[in-house]
Image (cartoon, rainbow, N blue to C red):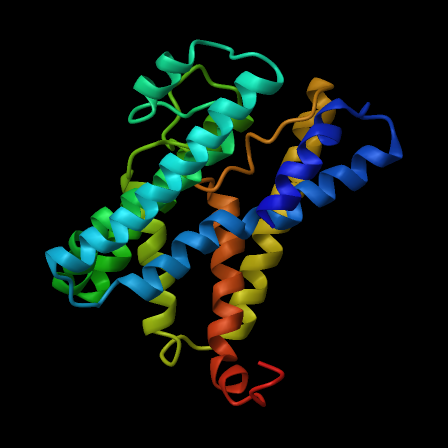
Length: 261
């Protein structure tokens, strides 16, 4: 899904809006937008509730750091050889701890380092809270800021965004999205009509993103992805629905023949 987002981004932004192709690019750019919030939710499901030692945390952080540094170096030197550096190689190297290199999509690799680093803290926080307080935490970190951010963007109010996507640090919203995944996973048996609610969340999130993006883009005569970022409420709603549908049918999936699974 990430590959599809990056592949279609160019033609989505450059195709005239009055072209029928643009609608196709809009759909192709919106459908995979559950990818990053689902990645965060799955991280929450897999990492929250585990026991952590310093050695285990460092092992995970070290692996992700090696990947991050290796790929950043690859892009820095490839860019210098093929197109000439946008800034000196030394400047790129010195800025790596605090700034994305020449490949902008590597912000996700920074996020992976942060997730592993924060895993023991996030896990302890989740376990220390009651279920009601976990929901309250999600309300404060994901839902309320998401509603306010959507309001700011739709009405073009001159105010600072309440949600910070594509950051190199671990925001509370990212932790809140991890909580969402684990909450759905832990409470699957207690949530009545989980399958129906999950389908409704998918339709609301995906349909809402398509509708608001189309209306905004046609009104401003320019393509936009400002409603599609991984911390945006509609994208989180979409992703939560996807997680819910899988969790709802978890036993059926687990009981599939091994070869099919």
